[in-house]
Image (cartoon, rainbow, N blue to C red; front, side, top):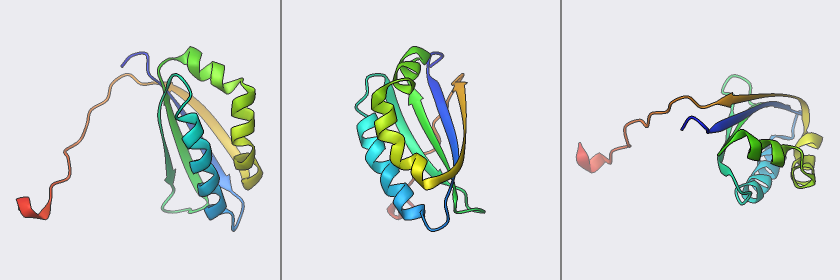
Length: 110
C-alpha cells in the first residue's frame, strides 16, 4: 500500500457543460484504465456546487504516474476535459493506509 500514489484533480466546469464533462471523463477514464500502473479512477461531484468535480486516480507508483502525466497519450485523452472546465487544481498524495467499509446489506438480511 505504501507505494500507491493518488492524484486528485479539482475542476470547476463551465456553466451548462456538466453532462459533456462527465461523458468526456468516462471516455478518457476507459482509456486511462488500460495504462500500465493505473489502479483505478473515480469522479465525484460536489453536492453544494454541481459544477465542481473531483477526479481521483490511483497509481502503482509515482514513476508510472509521472510517465503518464508527461505523455502525449495523456495530452490527447484530457484535451476534451480542459476545453470544458474553467479552472483546475492538482494534488498528488502517497496513500499511507486504507480500510474498507462495511459492505451493503440487502433488505432480505434485515
